[in-house]
Image (tube, rainbow, N blue to C red; front, side, top):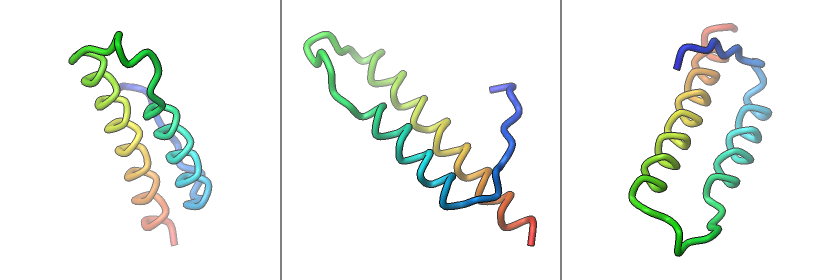
Length: 64
């Protein structure tokens, strides 16, 4: 993950964005076509989204 992510310093917006992204990732479609790789890919996307949120929370705490 080499892209720079800038915080909006608005925790409410960050939480809302996180919820929206993860909700979309958890939508179950074509379950019969899923594999271990599908689950791994979704888990990685959710983890990266959570790390982004954590970074935004740190940015909010660091900027009084």
